[in-house]
Image 1 (spheres, rainbow, N blue to C red):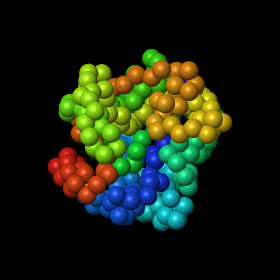
Image 2: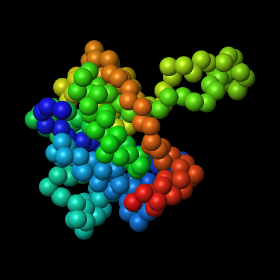
Image 3: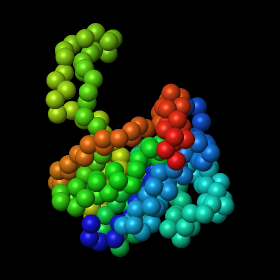
Image 4: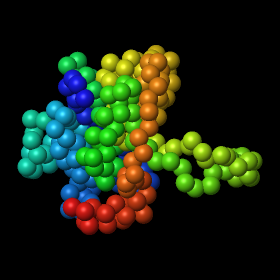
Length: 229
């Protein structure tokens, strides 16, 4: 991938379904955000990582970093925004104009590997935007608000979106600017790229890449982490 590369690690979520701030709670002996942070820093092409956290844990996060062996000159903690897209915007601004590519990743995906990140980066180079995803394998049905089945949905061509997501920085800025002007919500970076006129591609993750959302995800992720690392 030509041009400088920066990463944005999104760790400003509230963790409502878990009942605590998952980004700074320890899993497998380290704060949740430390696992994907180390993986991003392990990618030679990524120059630096901006980590978005809640304002009330900002100083704690900075203090934690100072006590680790991580390269502090390559990591910057900043307050996140109200919505996911706001945090991405703050992150891309913090990376600066010199960064050509942005790697955006959810801190709650603690199992992501360097191999997957580099696969997505390679695909983004060809199109301007790419994201990790998993093909739907379950039967999918549409219902009304009361749960009454309306129809069976053909799962062929359906994917579950994941991170990392890699977008050329100027494309991401343009898409997020358009979303802000239209007061619309974009739930991932490829949606922002589409607003900028760029159709991204999906890269099958092909490995455990679950997002910690409920307690069962936490237990499974910790099991994987203790076995792998």
